[in-house]
Length: 318
Image 1 (cartoon, rainbow, N blue to C red):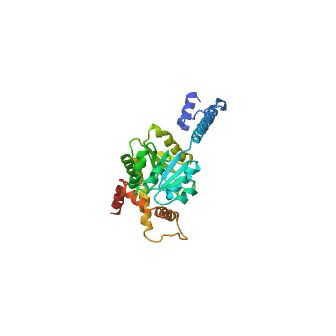
Image 2: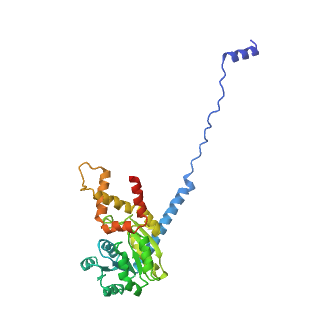
Image 3: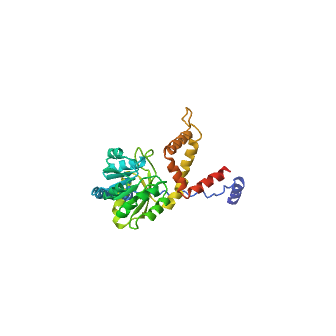
């Protein structure tokens, strides 16, 4: 058989297999040698940063320890006493000014004195204690009246840092700027917790603040005051008063509104078959109804953005 016939026979009896280009196999990368040191370098940098942070924190603690603040608290009710206890824990000197006689409570918390807000002479004695900071821990609805009662003392001691802790911030800011001497520093704050939610500590609880007007003379007392909350573990949130009130209308006011509404429908109490959702409802009712009605009313009356929240609820109802 000739070579030509043999090739023809092979072509007719065997189907040629098509050549298919398969997926290209990736070329295995060589493992990076541990000796290149990248991870070791990163860990070394991380350790260095931790050391630097610890050094800064030690220096900060040393500076804070050089001076304790003289803090006056106006309004020595439940919330004022709640703050006073923490201030005392950090060894700051405390004086109280209250509508009612809170001398026993003040002594129990280590306060130097408790003055009467209704006595003009006693108000002046309160300011004559050479206070670094005055914290206004009164209700929203009595805020303007309280500022009027403090007017003479504020004018006589214009370089005292004034701090408010109201749940509405634009109203507090405007009232303070309107009534205080131009040289008086103003720090608007809102601890987003209270005696109930903060009874086990302040770790990771939000503390909102706005340095509305802080002079050079008041800068050190201001930073020392903020450091109390930093040291207690609060989550520090710097925010304008306006932005705070926008957020609060759709969070704090809404929570209080729903809690009050649910609390008014009857005797809500735990049952043997409670769901997690119902347990949360009971907690909201308990927390909101335990607060004063003045707080609830103030959240509505003195936060201009709360009306929009109410309007949205009405539209949903329709």
